[in-house]
Every structure is written in C-alpha cells, then in structure tokens.
Length: 558
Image (cartoon, rainbow, N blue to C red; front, side, top):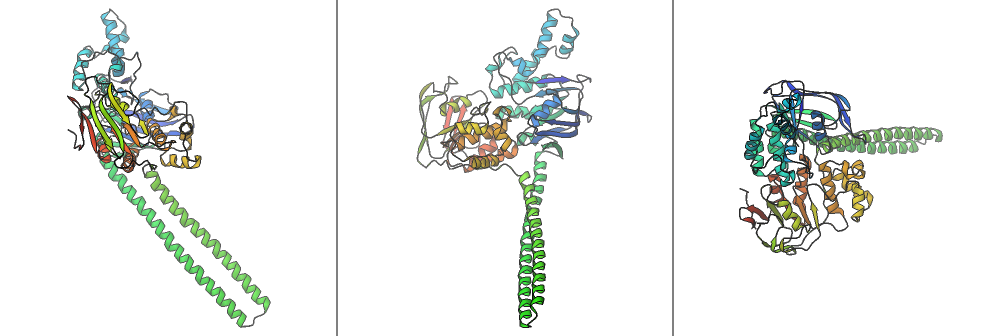
C-alpha cells in the first residue's frame, strides 16, 4: 500500500535538491528478543541521490524504511523528515475489504473529493484534495502506462495478482506527487514488462529515493549504495557494480591476509620444531659429556634440573607462539566468513536418468479458463522454467503440478516426493518454530547435526527456535527450504515460486549455486533471469496469446 507522510514543508516542492529529505540522528532500534538492528545510527539522505539499501535478510532494511516513514515507533534517537515522503511496502494488503485505492494510497484523497462534491467545507478535505483535483484522470493514465487493465479505484484488490498490486502501489505513490520515495523491494513480483516500466519511472524520477532491493539491475540504476550490517550504515559511492568491485577487492585482500597468516604459521611452526629438535640434541650431547667426564652426581642433578627448567620455559614459549599463530589464522578466517555468502548444503535427493517424474495428459489448469490442455512427460533431473506475464496463472499452474490444486480437466501425475516453496513459505506455521516444524515433518537428523546444517543455511540458534511469525521473508524462505530437504522423505522434485523474491543478494547467489548442484528435478517460476540462467532450464512452459506453450530447448526469452 502506497503511504504518504507529510512534514512541515512545501507539499509540492520539486527537487532535485541536495538538501537532505531524511536525517537520522543517533537512532537505535532493537527487537523484543534483544537483537540490535540499528546502533546509534546518524545518516543524511539527500534529495539528489538515488540510494540502494542492501543488507542480509533480517538486518533491518524494511524496518529502517518503516521508521523513516513513521509507520513504526522510534525507540531511541530522532528522525527528521522534510517534504512529502511516499512509502511502498514490500507486500500489499489483500483483505476482502481492501480496494485498489487503498493499495495505491489514494483512498483518503478520493474520500476528501467526495466530501467536497457533497458540499463539505472542512479544511482537512481541501488540504487532502489540493493538487489532486483530476486524480481519476491521472489514475486512468498511470494504470495504462503501467500496462494494467482499466480498473476503477473502487474495485477490490482481490482482482489483481501480486505483481499487479505492486504496480498499483507504485503508480499510486507517483500519483501523490511526493518529494521522496521509499520503496521496499519494488521489483518483486513484477514480470519483464513491468520491470521495464519501473526502471523508466526511476530513470525519470527527480526527487529523493531510497530503494531496498536485491535486484542487481535496479541497484545498478542507483547512484549510491548503503549497506546495513550489524546495526551500522556504510555508504559506497556509485552503483551496485562499483560496490561489488570494491567488495571483491576487499575479499581478495582478506583472502590474501588469510593465506599470509597460514603461511606464517606453517613457517613459524617449522622453525619452532627445528629449534626444539636442536635443543633436544644439545641437551642429550651435554648429558653424555657430563657422564663421560665422571662429574659428581650432585652436579649432574643440578645440570639436569636446569635443563628441565629451560625446556619447560621453552615449551611454554612455544605453546604461546602456537596459540598466537592459531589466533591470527582464526581472526583472518573469521573476517572472510563475515564477508561471504551463506553456505547451503543439500542432501542427496537424486532422480535417476529415465525415471518418470511428471506426466500431464490433456491437463487444463484451473485458471485461466481459456488455457489450452497440456500433454507432457518429463523424466530424470529436469529443469522446467515457467515464464509469463503477471496474472497469466503461473502460480496456479505450479500449484496444479504440486498437487495442491486439481486440474480443471485431464490428468496431472507426479511420481516422486515433492516440495512446494511458495512465495509466502506457507509450510511454516506462524506460531511454530523451525525446529518444531521439522519435528512434525519427521526429520531424521540428530538435533546437533540439524542445528549445524541450519547454521550453514544462515539460521542461527535464535532464529531456529523463534516462532515463524517473527522471521523475515527471506528467513522464512530458507526455513521452508530446510523443511523440504531435511524432512523424513526429502523432496526429489522442488517446486519454486519466485524463490529469490525475499532473499538478499548474497543468499540469492548462494541459492543459485546450490540449485545448480541439486540432483533432483525442479520446476521454477521466476522473473529473475540471473536465477534462470544459473539453473540452465532443460524445458520451458511459456505463456503465449494462444495459451501455454511447451518447449524442450528453451532459448533466451523474448
């Protein structure tokens, strides 16, 4: 839902101004469990810069936008807003009572106009209506530009798909003529055409902008990258490509530091062993000389005690040196771990070549009704990509293949264990923790091994024990993936519905690496071309004007 907040500033000022539209002063914020998301942060966001806000899942990016807009109460510090700021959250409301005007954030404006038309003289109505007297004409034009049907603002939000609702919210934010935009994952759920429309709007925008995103194309259109990491904000001049070049240099330097620390340890340990061996030889030689010289027993005892004391001191010195060398290696390795993506270990879920996995015979998806019947047989560890514009029924088709929806006609037969990872990670129950869910699903791994695997997935002790309702969208997706792979019967067919939508960039890249190595079969709905290129589809179902078209040798999408 596009939301607008107003500060005591000209309502329709037209930036491009270098003055900050948003200032944070000593802002701190923590979750109820004590995790600190912002730690005494002070930062200015000026009106002439496009900021791409990035960070790990759960770092607090969405929360920062909510605080910036005023949608969430501030715990410590001060936030200064200048001008009118429009905020588009990541997910749009879809209750039975929600209208498209609610999603666009223009319902109060339309209501004020209705009051004025009915004779209202209240100043609050005129304040809301100011500058928006022709908002219905603007609504029609903006929806047409966004490639949306000629809906009326009063239509229920339920008529639109997730991607269409996102476009409605973005269009509504622009219609409010704000001085700055706060966008939370604006390209999520958007098809290729809608993403082009979004990029055109961003290119034409002249106000302040903060966009939380994992979309590398969108981030490359930014002029500054701000990274939220462990409670602090770090600014990098330039777009995402420049940020990655900088991070790659840092990673290379960290790798070099680790290699140097390991080489230093190896060389020092070799030198210590040589010194120890030489000392042992000297001690043995001196003892033989003393015996051959027929020295008094008391003198021999004193020399032996001195030698033992010296050896003890040398042993302590060696232990301290070894500990210091090990600590240097650990510190260098820890820095690399902190800058690396999440490691993801997938268990064996192989599908043999030639084994039938999926069979469709004259199967018609339940939506859209005009979809043609499909007859397809897929065997072995295939990779099926499902492509199409928003609203064509991709998620419905995926649900039919997963057995969650019956076909309108025909047969849909899946012959291997299947796991469905939908956009809302619905396998996770709001009041249950991940560990509890895995126990219900009959996970056979010992708890210690399970916790270790979950830690590799980026889900630490606090997250695996927390109710699913407290997890971020990206954390929920990782939890759902863990349920699919480490339940009693691991999935040999993964059904993925926009799997990278809620992942941070590093997690998305690691997921792509893991899916490349996944030995089972896979069906993927995604607008993320980097993901689809990474998994190398062997087959494609693409929506065409005549309905679904099956292709055994997919090429570059048009």
